[in-house]
Length: 143
Ligand code: SF4
Image (spheres, rainbow, N blue to C red):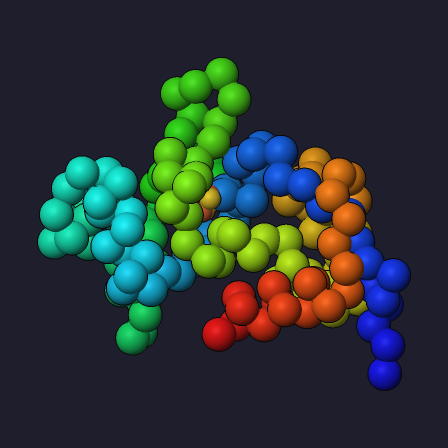
């Protein structure tokens, strides 16, 4: 069965930081990703887990800061003119696979809602992404 996005979609990250805030959520990361982020921050892995993470069930998430009623990822930097990820190059897979998450691509309306409600200025602009790339990315997010 063909997907609604069989002709591909366009997306380029504009680093708006808008997908790094909003309602409460979780930014899942693997142990290896935690080590990479600790290294980037030039702190120990223990310090990283102590200051920037929380355990939810059996998994680890980055923590959030509540600012003006919005839940910012702890690494969303609002001190610069344009908000952005402090760890962009080492951000976790969850962030790298945005916006091609299964829940966002399940239908055209879900995709358009994601663009509008995030709001994500990169959706439907920039680089062409084929349907097979979209599916691989969505599977990686869930792996
Ligand atoms: S790690 Fe970076 S890209 Fe991921 S949610 Fe946090 S601020 Fe955003």
